[in-house]
Length: 120
Image 1 (cartoon, rainbow, N blue to C red):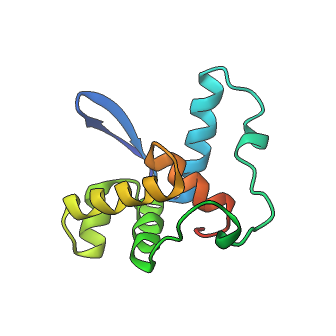
Image 2: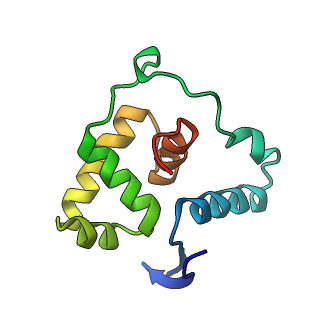
């Protein structure tokens, strides 16, 4: 596994993860701490379904790249640096992704894409 570290974000400790697997584990741990049971069923990867069968607008190639990079690197700043775009552009892509996938957080968007086999 990759490097794990904690940073402060707006005064709160935030654990930075270096892979989508670590991100998924962090999500499961947070759900368990919140008392939400059966996270394996909640976050399990269903059989792959074509996007056209869902009521979701397909993501652009760039949105997919941003989502995969956020999943891999864990932060907007690192994603912006890796893709040589501004953090604001990353935030805009993530806002579009959340709208298209009908989720409210980036973590949910990553989980949504992972369950569908769109990111690793």
